[in-house]
Image (cartoon, rainbow over all chains, first blue to last red; front, top):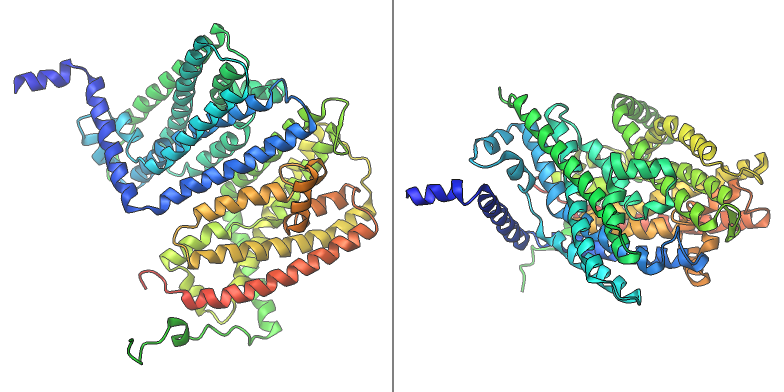
Length: 275
Length: 289
């Protein structure tokens, strides 16, 4: 018994955290069996990918490169975008919706009573695994793009790709958590999320290179969706320098720390909807 | 063998009869409903503002992309960088004045049963939707018009070729386009009577619509096959056609031809709307009612 308790404290909170994530994932799978219609929603998102490919075809019917990007590079970028948007739709967005709903209705108070990290609980509260289909398709598109490039991509660039993709996911997660945490003060933040989806859905599908200078700064450091999508794609399309990987890591660490600090600050000032 | 008393549901309940109405009553209804909608939109001006912000993002991105394709001095499909700016700025206005959001609302209307009170009124529910739509567009213009000017100034749009006569000619095209798009998307919204989840269908429609209407690029930059598909669809006649008249790219007899195409599509869409509506409303049984 004492050994078990020691296990939770000693073996690390990481393992405990992983148990929580796995549990919610399993619940999500059970849910998808219940609402099969959602699977078709994810499938329709895949159909909309087709129009993006036609869009790329239209652009490259008129030019040979877009701000230095080849067709294969842009396809890789769309793959990264699809992976990240799948991740948002699978767990980040639905969990945030639930968090905001919970704060409004007072059910979030139950989350706080659970013996685990509240931010982790709130972040994986709702999982819709049907959206994993988007992640799979995104990975497929990245694979197709890497074959289409004709040049061999070195193992170092694949490593950079994987690293910066994780950083991109961290950036997007942290940014959305920062926005969602605002719900502790302003109950209605759905509208801010709508603006984020519009920026991510429109600007996130294009490389940073097409934007004028001031917009690049906004999309890298203020609403860093451009950075999150462009840098991993760049690793495959043209090669990344180690400095850019470090820079991307720094932005991810900064946003993650900010999201964590803001969450803790918000909880300290949270009095509960029923109180 | 089913019992003789069991008939198909559409034979049981006659569709609501909205064919008897007086123009005077309708006018009064519109005046009241419009005033109420304006008041609602003024009350929720924050949300209207957010929607204006989101509708500016897409044109900005398209401008940036196509400006890069054209380059500082080059020309693509008859468009220089400056012309692309003007095109997408005008398309933003046209999109604002023609879009409807009802296909996202009908799912909820049917599921929650909020459609029932609308059906009980002695007036066709479409009239409420039309007047809500017009009211929202009027309030939204307060944000969209300055945004359009800012886009043109900030990205140095090229206004050559625009003249007052062309602008006048674009107004009937705009009205025709708005009517046509309203009908198409209202029919799409009615799919909620058959499907419990319409998000998938709506997303699919939106991506095709944005592309074929000219929201992604002017039709002249499309490869010939895609351009032909677009021109045989109703979508460019709701948006790109209007922008092209305003920019002075479509002139003379082509404008009259375009009006004609719009009229044909409006007639077809009207027929479809009546057919689908009469079937949809018979199918309706508010969940929980």
